[in-house]
View 1 (cartoon, rainbow, N blue to C red):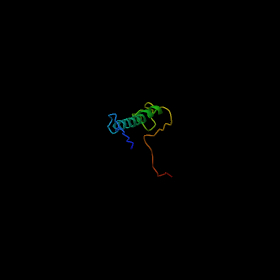
View 2 (cartoon, one colour; view 1 turned 60 degrees about the vertical axis):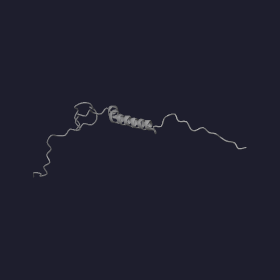
View 3 (cartoon, rainbow, N blue to C red; view 1 turned 30 degrees about the vertical axis):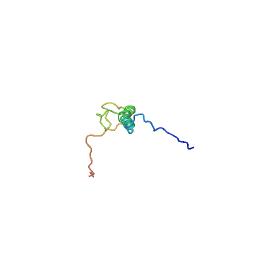
View 4 (cartoon, rainbow, N blue to C red; view 1 turned 180 degrees about the vertical axis):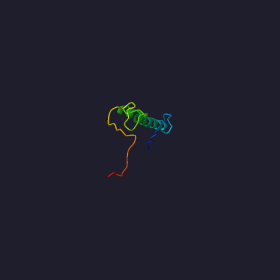
Length: 82
């Protein structure tokens, strides 16, 4: 006598969304990581605010570090007097 194995069909839990939730979760995590780097790292590094001068002026924020003073007028005359 032959043995017949009657396996029931696979049941689904009703989640036929093709992993869209996981894709949105990955995009959300990537966005949060980007925002952490964009806003968080300058806060951690105590960088100067956006309106400060890159020539070493201390108009606010970062008062430490190297300060470079650039003169208003530079004489580049190469003719030497004798």
